[in-house]
Image 1: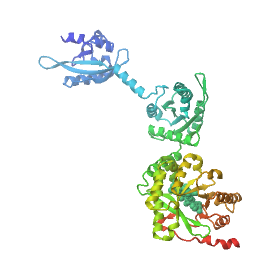
Image 2: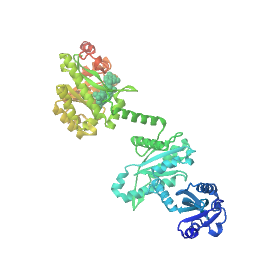
Image 3: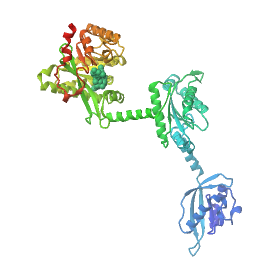
Image 4: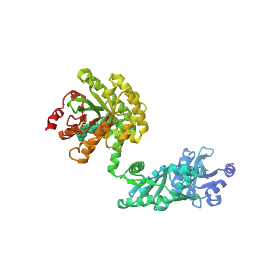
Length: 556
Ligand code: C2E
Ligand code: CA
Ligand code: CA
């Protein structure tokens, strides 16, 4: 009965005696392993696969002692040598006395499932469009022992403005270009190098064993090869590529070196598209630094880490302060007091500028209110606050200014808002709208850093400014560089012609002050009169004697 059942089963079944001799070997087993029953019955079981000898012994021993196997996945070999993936189950066969006389082994062929799994794994690391490996595949390749023994470099490559190709010619053409790029990359690297498509128009090449000295040359040639025109469907398509290169540090994780190649790419794009950048340690540190600062900046206002310093602006005729400019600082928990040039550009990029700007506005107005409350003579002082381009583009700005004025009860004209000249050029539309709205609130508007932005005085006329601040770079050259002296005099004359009051920034010497006063500059600001300082160390109504000495000397 057993024999009949075993022989008739569609599953590969083998019956083995405790001494490992094969007792039964059914047709399904013949088919699965390629050995016929006539060839193996009576022989020791592992004849079919000597490599599985120990394993087979163990299985037999286990099954004889009542530990059956249930679908254990093992690999066997077919007689012709190819691997056969099987799930093995065993059961003991007892005689009437309950003794184990043989073990029945059932082998289920799972090769089809295994190869489907392998295909899925392969697909998960492949890019369908180009047939290259994808990001996952690239990471695995970097991990591959073959690359780990040699110096590895990852080159991240972006096709610049590739969207325009898709927009102009359609996705089919775009896809063909991507395929052609893949092919060119494959053709220009060595067989052991790996080309990957990371996403969209982003590719990467993994090179091993490239000497640092020749790296730049290799990359340059690789990228140049990509920029020769592509012939697709009778069209000639030109593309530009930008690259970023990172060399793997010792023990650096694959994802990390790919990330750093991306950082290098990011830098290259900022410096100039169509070029490439190798990420050395200094560049990497600078980037990490920026990320850290940018992250820390997000909650700086809420955590109370921002400080305002105030610098006096004095009247050219009396030397008395007419107002102050609020200048922000960041008391960084680890790095100490940071100046605005260290974090304002970052805040503009990352969007945290509006929160910082709101805090500055509120704090500056509060300080001015407190000074006025403490001394009625301070009731005419003004407070200047700097606005960045991003703030002018933010529709909430006018509401923030209105709120700051309402909360502190200040007369709007005492608040001076300073914007740099570049604002008028980068986004004249939003600038005009925002400045118009602010002017309607009654605040005073000043154009900052005048002379650095190449805007003309006629452009100036279109915006509702009342104050012009001459940039420090011109003031510092007064009296020593002839052209600066001329520019300052001309700016003063033209500003006055347009009805603007002029403040000179960065006045450091008496000689500079003298010349500015002679040319009719109304107000002066600079280290000569006072450095920016916290509100607690300022007596707001001091008098600057540098200015009072002036008339006597002029007449001399
Ligand atoms: P700014 O508006 O031109 O501010 C004047 C800068 O010149 C200040 O630098 C000030 O300390 C410096 N300064 C003043 N007098 C002299 C002088 O006699 N000699 C020299 N060498 N320097 C002088 P600070 O505080 O480092 O600010 C730099 C820039 O950061 C400011 O230039 C302004 O554009 C920006 N900034 C400062 N606070 C804020 C803020 O709250 N919001 C925004 N958006 N930007 C701000
Ligand atoms: Ca300013
Ligand atoms: Ca300025």
